[in-house]
Length: 195
Image 1 (tube, rainbow, N blue to C red):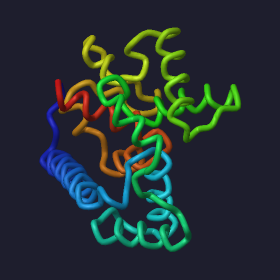
Image 2: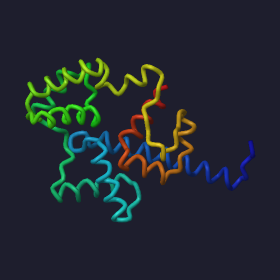
Image 3: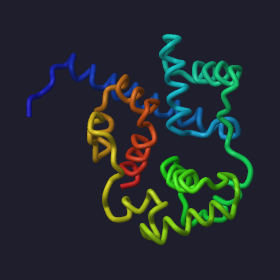
């Protein structure tokens, strides 16, 4: 293994420090915005695009500015309410609430032209899909239980350890964290950190 020059090592340390600071910042911001922001691919894309369009760095204040500006445009980032939420709470043990799991239910409901906000329709879709694909079909953690890491797209570095995660350059990390595949990227982060 080649040794790094002093300048290269300093640059590497600076990147790792910036990446760690960015993660702490985003985690803190998300913790402070549980009432008005639900993390999802679509929401992360909207915030990330707004920051890029306005040529703004990742900071707590800029995340607040993005949220305010997009909410002023009529975009809601608030947690869902109503029958879907009540139904999901009843299935906390066997439904993870991930965008992928909701997409499976919505696909079934749409295919059979059923109401998306009706508890009986949700239950019927849930039971049918579970019976066809198995009891863990709606639990993204099932892969982690078997020792597998959650899937991430091929263009994202296929990190399997915290060290490999920390080696991702800050700009790339920000792009993956807020990009179109942010849910997959975040799931992999959580799985690696919980190893």
